[in-house]
Length: 320
Image (cartoon, rainbow, N blue to C red; front, side, top):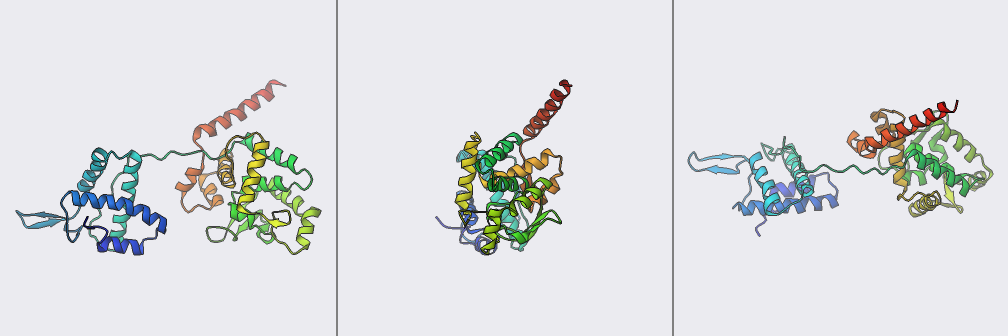
């Protein structure tokens, strides 16, 4: 098939200068190939010009590609290719990115996707957090597993309340912790530029106790600055998740719990405390609030927790 789109300057420029990662470029290209096939299906061939897309013989005039053509393409995917709502949704997202880029670099004068609505698929919000009750069960199991040093307890409490990522926890050092400001400076093992997360008082007190323990002092005396370790070695990605799964099993939690689960749990616990989403976004260090929203559990879980707390208060009052 003649590669009208993939051989065009449009595609070559987009592929060269888009800020997408290589894996995403491949995914987008698969969708653009579908669009290319539709162009061929409609009889387009040769040099592709989105500004002079239609030609009207009667008036000898040209017109740019428009929303109606995109509508026809989406209908083609839906009715002739039996595309799912998910596929339709993604294809619109890919075309929005592609045409938006072309317009931003002035390769096209008119963007047919500029105000194109995408109502084909609503991504399902998956609740990856664990409940307040499950948090307590995990902390209790962690304390039982290590009642003297309380390393596991401190590790779990930190991940639940700060939202630090796996790599950030493993690379955490003493110099990053500011007890005076009640913050942790995140500048090691992180995805973004240096930032801070806040520590609740309970975590601050537990960290002080943990860092003054003889076992930690022995580790520090050997020149180590990492906060967490196992068997005199730095924690690995696999080891920390293995530890979480082991203690989760002991706690009787059937849900798949990983280090990343605790980031979602931090968001949930902050939401439960009626903390504004903008503050939750800062704690998790998300660039966009839309990302933070995906970390928050459905409102029914939030309401159920409130109801449970209210019931607990009522039960206490009935005992008086």
